[in-house]
Length: 612
Image (cartoon, rainbow, N blue to C red):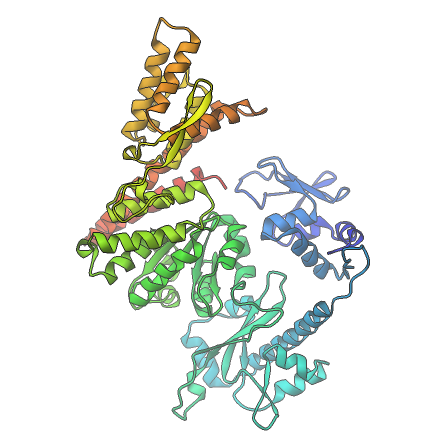
């Protein structure tokens, strides 16, 4: 644990205006600085930085805090990570304490510092070699379309084929042989001699979010070898106390600003894919380091963005990879979509072919849910969707239910259940965690209020489950059941996306309110009868609405306004899906161009409606 004194030292010694100046254009405004807010788009700068208090405040979005909270928000770090990041930038030695409050000396921390020095020195060496690389290497770099700006931005270097100069370089820098081996830079041959692990390769440094080199990815330069032996295209650093593949994303420090600005990130497979897209203006892109997307990768990205888009090749291997990713990311706190590239092309190929038009092309690619990709693969294995019978659908449904059992967010799990049920052509109630998908109907027990107490009764699964937007609307309506139903029924923006059962319920509420005879208690009893007839999900919503409305500071009217925006988003998503269907089916290039323009415009509108 970091000592309170160290934390306070970081707060006092790190000047926030200097820190924010790395990404923001600060201008003097009286005794303070003003800049465009780094956390939301705006035309007129509304973020003020005060050197006296070493704090910032944005009058546009309300974000405020000190240097530590700024790093937490801008980089998605946890508190301790932010303190360590700032201490490293400012050259502050952090004191760590144990449970009893005494200073704790960590051998692991010292070893990590040694590894950082070794990898930093190796990066200097690879950059030095790059500047002196033979002509065949320069020709290869030109053939790959790598620009000097990209090489500098990503710190690309070169590891020569022969010689042991890296060994002597590290020793002169004071790096011990043991540390060099642990870092993966060197290895011992059969005779016990030290040899470089990387030879004849372009070196892509893997940089942590603290801007420390933690490993390397080496890409073979084929022309350097003429002996005909097969060699792996890529070699990655071995895992070490600094480098964990399942947690590390290549290119994240370079992409961080673009990711925050755009609210989404593309995830690709290779280092050159990241660099190639960056060169043509697609800068919100990262890559996994020699492994598939993991839940740790997803958790890291979820702190930064609303959407993650996986870019896969459109061949069988790409579609299998997308199907596997569904099980990994189903429970992430971020929406994950997949887009398939034209078969035979990777992102780097695409960038070299389309140049500046790559970003528009990627934005126009159809985006599919990972559940949809998973179901596609399952149906393919069973001979096609039309050929998949009830026994196979039952097996697929059971596999999906096992994955969804780990999804902790009720609304997410509910929407995934509905999507799966639609594709499997079964009742949505059978996909629920308490149900079964083998054709045996499940009967959930739900509560109903009688005589002031709640008793159990069977639910009606035949009505189907409510969508997230419908639940949001019903919470608002139930909190204001005497006034809001008539308003909703007169609002086509909302009615257009509601199911018949929700509209029927609104009509019944309006009829109860319109009754001239009857006391308030009798009307409330009628409302409860209406709820009882609809089952447990509706009764539970009624309970939630009453609890939420009773809480101080709540505004049920705002709930409805939020619902209207959610309905508009849902309608626009429906339009986007239809446009994508037309794009896929159209063979007319001019018509496709018009549709792509409509899609881009619609997506921009949708982004403006989506809360960040």
